[in-house]
Image 1 (cartoon, helix red, strand yellow):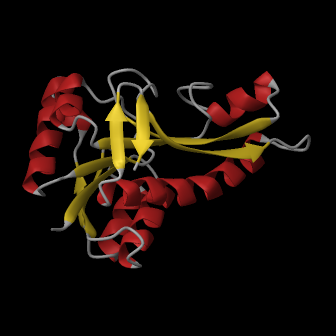
Image 2 (cartoon, helix red, strand yellow):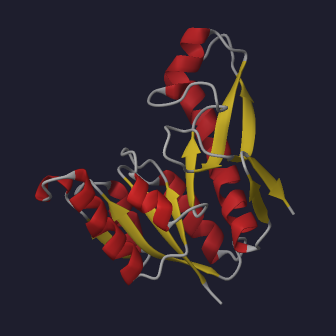
Length: 202
C-alpha cells in the first residue's frame, strides 16, 4: 500500500525537494508525494511541485472569514488526496486543533533548533544571540503547542565564532535535508511508536 504524503509550505520548499528526491530514489519506501499545499500564491515550492508533476494547491487564507474556515478547506484538500501523513516544511502557520486531531501523530514538522530550546521564528538567530556552542534541527510530531510535540530525530551542528545567522542557517539546513526524509522513512516503515512525550524507534 502506498503512503500518501501531503506537504504544507509557505516558501521556497528546499525541504520539500529533499522529501521528493528521497521518495523518488526509494529511500522513503512505498510512498508518494500526492499534494503540495501553500498559503502563499507565489511560493516557489509550488513551482517545484508542478515541475515534478505533483498536485500543487494554493489555499488563500484571505478568502476565508476565519482560521477555522481556512482549515476546513485545508482538511477538504487533504482528504481529497487521501493523505496519510502531513509534513510541515516551512509552513508559517500554527495549525488548529481540528487539523491536529484529524491527523494525530501523523503531522511532522522540521524546526531549525534543538528543541525545546529556541522555539518559534528566527531560531538560528535566537541560538546565536544566546551564545550556544551547539545548534541543530529537530523533527517532531505536531501537537497544539508551538514546536512542542514529541521529538522524533535531532541533529546537532557546531556554532562557529565566525557564524552569522545566514551561515549557521545554511549548515543547519543541510542537516534538515538529511533528518526530515529519515523521519518520514521511519514512519513509512511503521517504526515510530509514540508513548506520551517519547518517540521510540522500533
